[in-house]
Image 1 (cartoon, rainbow, N blue to C red):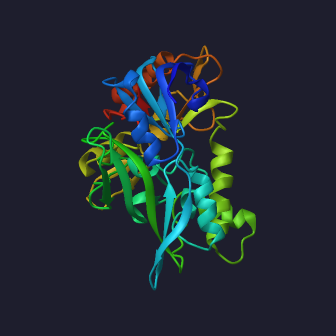
Image 2 (spheres, helix red, strand yellow):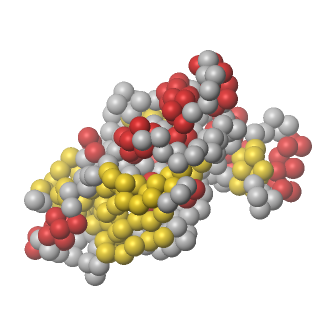
Length: 337
């Protein structure tokens, strides 16, 4: 059923009170197909909404907002080393991770407590603590919104990059992801080298490493550093960590010996955007109800009644200051509407 002039405040984790001209939830491919044929929404712009945890509304949406509520999680295949688990795109991401952990299936433990839904995970190639979706992604099914056909995408088809995929570039707003299938490991390959995971495991007193222990360590770290969207509006990391050439990194290191960076396989260096922003004095900054989180400078927050345009304007000031001080341009990770 299509509703008109629906307030989206409860559908985005920034808590921005934007309005959508039309709004409709769907819980199956058939329900989505029926909505696309509704006469009142023929020809209007369309957008798929998942958990609303990676979006900033700077204005109302003059189109049809389709809320993906497709549920279901099940094992669909198995081989000697892997189990293949399929999840509906509308499933909560952390709930899906917990489902896999309860079955002792490894691969997603480092991605615990990332907000949002399963459908957004390949779109964004979500990642944390040394792991990205592409590492255990198998395939997805998506409905092309124009010609109404269901297409299966393999890992290669998705053209995954750092927080990137074909769904953010050439296929933007063209597909609705219906389900995602992951290839998970029967025998875990523990990844604890990134960030503070080892320190947290030690603090927890973990004697025998397990995927459940790594998941809990990640949850503890994220909870300590990142604001709960239920209490303070935010979309997690607002900016990507920029990569620079080796020459640029050496120049930055000469000028700023404390610069935080990680070497990449292609010879470039990934800079910690949070460190760059903090050096520009933004950490804990607040103007009205728009601000930069006091514990993590990568996170922009809505303390109550900030407009999306105010948060976007603040993000531009952050981008400009980092460019001016370091000669590095930050890119927004959050989708802007």
